Length: 61
Image (cartoon, rainbow, N blue to C red; front, side, top):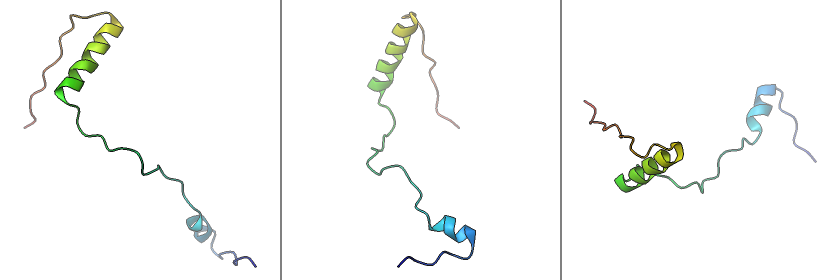
């Protein structure tokens, strides 16, 4: 025996399962200074400008 169909089509849509991201995705925090430096160096090597200067960001107000 099957369940009766909802009278309202919106109720039918709300009853469907909605896929979501798996909860196994690791939460990543801010990059460390070493990770930032390694990433910058890899970018510079890729574009062929190993002498590029990084912009130093100051803290927000």
